[in-house]
Image (cartoon, rainbow, N blue to C red; front, side, top):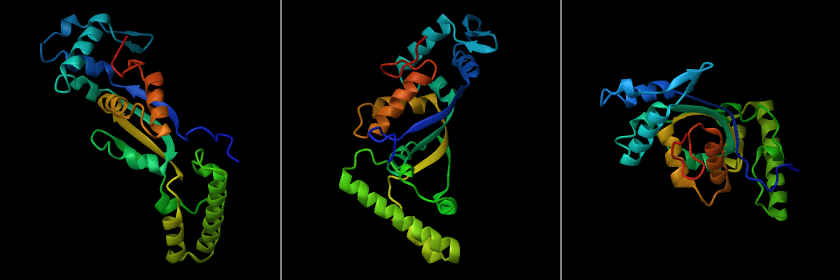
Length: 215
């Protein structure tokens, strides 16, 4: 059985963040206040100065029309999560880009196993049912590999549960991330709460308690 049973299935790998330098520079364009910028590089790492950070906070509080710098800071990461979670994530269309592992083209590449699915909240009888479905999926997979029949392929596509875990590489901006934190904190799905915690813990300058930029 799955060693991770009891925990929501969402894994975030390879988080990278960039764009702070040009976001700070652009943030000061409206008032031509570049001379007041105090950010700097330390060992090839960009550090936000106190004056720039103070301006970021004030612009943030002024509303979305003033905090445009957030849209110029980007993050990329690999996320593995169940299809039912991805269905909700897909509501964040503006400012996000995704490349996913294809269920259309690669669904038959490997045998299905229980660890390919999220089932931490299923009771014992439904875990057994899921195992039966996996057995049927593997039988249909073998038929498809033997015959290359589109009908056998359809059996895989339409029988596949929404608990199937899919990996996608996501690129989004800090405005997206702040909105996710505000909108998905204390969500019914455990995966959202875990994802929010990961963003707060791992993304630079996101405040632990509410997603606002901090030093």
